[in-house]
Image 1 (cartoon, rainbow, N blue to C red):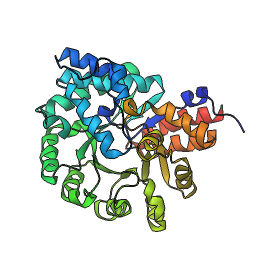
Image 2 (image 1 turned 180 degrees about the horizontal axis):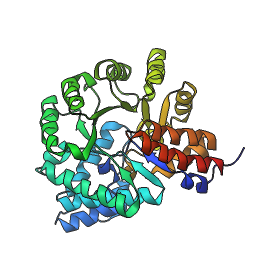
Image 3 (image 1 turned 90 degrees about the horizontal axis):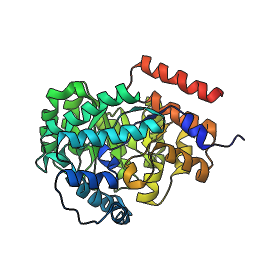
Image 4 (image 1 turned 120 degrees about the horizontal axis):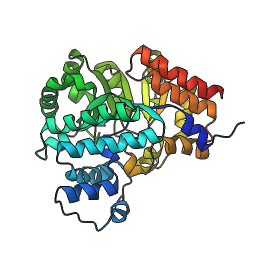
Length: 337
């Protein structure tokens, strides 16, 4: 069996479909933005920030995650946030991204919606031109806020539909089922947007949430979705529809103390389109290459398995068929090398 080397993983042209831009806010960047905006931090240095990353489940992670966002204030801040991520992506040969952003986390702090999306969009344009990283943006609603708030933010987004490819749903899943947002997602679909929703690992009522995603919301993709494996009929339907599942191994190891390598392999065996992603890489200290490498090193994933996972990401992306074909050709060259 050919070893999976760092060079091999680096050589793979990759698509990332589950990364929160706010989750790419590195400790050093937190300090530089705080200095720019005259914000006093409770930490003395970036190392202290990392030391404070004491999370063991979703709520404990979200508490730290939202607090750090306070340094993001201006359009230039959001531009810099996105460009920092795109540069890291380019360094790891990530050629296509469908990143998430959480506007409610910013408008609730008094930051205008336009400030957020315009800064990110400028970075997308520059990343395509300067770095060769193509991207399409996904607006995520916070599920622990009201459906009315989600609808208000979808209305804010309507003048910017040319900057968006889809909508998603994230944040604390407990007692916040997909059905809560059925009307908002139906309206988003009517606007021509694609639909995805987080179904986080091992959450309360998670299997029923996945069922609602399929039967009520009729999503185009599922984020995480590991617990679908608890239901044969859900697995069969996900495979039949060819729906992508955006799995985040290192994130899973932090939040549920399980890399979920066995589960990812089980998805592949059932014909489910599992993909690998970094989720909130600044917090979990692992971008795309590190997530793929840990699957190889700790779960024994082979080159062929990693090629399949990587191809799946392009296949279930919301790119045009022509662009998918372009990336399939690049990936095939690596597989034949």
